[in-house]
Length: 400
Image 1 (cartoon, rainbow, N blue to C red):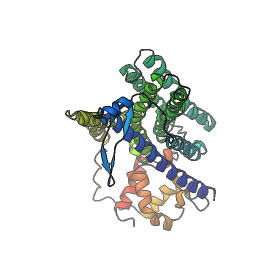
Image 2: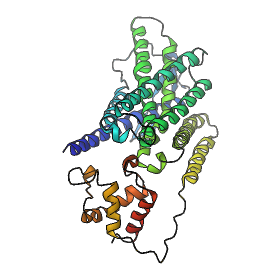
Image 3: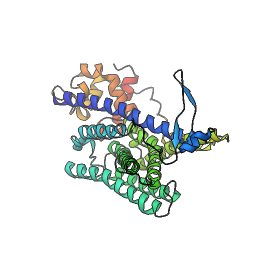
């Protein structure tokens, strides 16, 4: 019953997390597109009001004319919409899901003793510290390097230092945690910084601007500049975060020999492809050539990864080799799988303790243990490649 309730909690939290993440990333993508597509207003009255750029668009049968003020309008409108709950809800639901799936089951999901042999409690503490430390270091890089150099908007040194930290964190995560958890941890690390950007800098900066306007004071431009910097960073983090989160469904990624490098290259490809869209918006607005080479670079990285990780050709079965029997496969399953899939503990509602149940779930066993190599989780029971091959030959032979 406990496993069943945890499955329901996982389903509902994952569903919520995906919904609010779509809302957050969608609004982020839209405003980045908007910022890079604005044109100087043609109406002198708009310029006199302080409008720095506008866009005409058509959508859903109507025309829209969003306008952006250089710092702030001369007077505040009565109704002002704030974009922050999408961010907070995404982080809160994601952290709750991470807690249910990983922290409550640290011995199964966080710890792989072949990678690093430590106690689950220590792994949980390290995972939480991992998320916090990245935000602290990243924030200091932005403030002490970017702002100190007077380049709040787009200092390449800031980007370079953040990249170095992400590469180092990816390597460290893959040396400490189970591969599946390590990939997700790096994604959660970036996502935490994204939400912290909104919570600590973007929204407070906007509130200070409004407070200054209400007090009749001059509006400090630094708040808008800093918010823009963190918003730009967030849009570059999105695709790396998404691929890190999705990777836990693909064991051949996080089980690769140099899995930290696989993760770094995946995230690099995502960042390059995201940059392609950012510069495309600006190029179209300015009537320039769209620089597709960034997307081509990201695609090339993905192609190179696909070639690198391609499995070796499967050896042809020897014609004289006897067919694999159900008894042989069941002996492997009893040793490697039944610990978590039996009459008392049937993870994911799959029990394999009898030959009949094994035949019933043959396709799931083949997919999870052979094709995806996801099970046993973190290979906790030590299934060998020969044993996976035995399951493969049995299933491909019709699961007799």
